[in-house]
Image 1 (cartoon, rainbow, N blue to C red):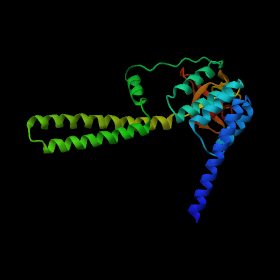
Image 2 (cartoon, rainbow, N blue to C red):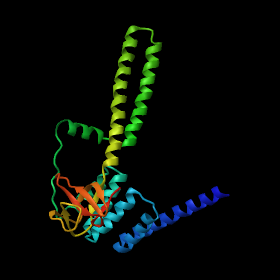
Image 3 (tube, helix red, strand yellow):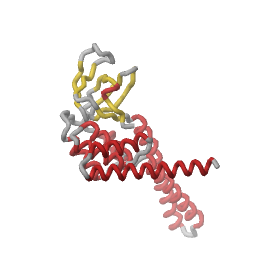
Image 4 (cartoon, rainbow, N blue to C red):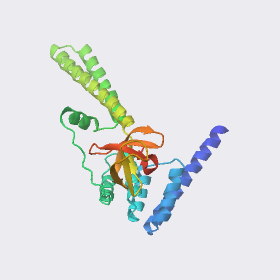
Length: 247
């Protein structure tokens, strides 16, 4: 009985979310962007999310020239659908409305190579690659074990060796990517203009100023303060209410 009730509630919840999403789409098409936002946000408040939902929210806020919410929702959409060309394109348009023009400090040498390699896939993809390579390793071992000629044995042995190295690389990449994702805490500045302090207290001096829509990375937490770092490497303390975390 409980399972039937759970299934009924789940089905009802899906229907409600789909209905709200369609109502939001209709409102957007009519240019009623605030109404569309309310429909979309009701789905988010119900703890349901999708890349398309956040993408549509971002478009609504962009149409209303609300920089920070637009960028926030496009970034949320990217977290759920990395490398989506349409989301990336609209995010770039929204970022052109930003006041802050922060240049990222380029990675060089081994760090750049490692970052570029690991960033090719997400954690789950690297894990599945490891599984696939393990299957190939097993097949190579079977081939090596049952081969009747030295040429085939050498061929399968080389295949085993290559698969083994590739497994190590993919496992390392999966672990590194997972740790990177866990430690990476991006956030978006919501306030129109906010001072970044040298210390986590109101009376401390200003290190620099940030404006709405700027992406920051949270490095530490102390009471109602967040230590943040921006793409050019500068860091400081900001009031927690001034930013909204993406994860």
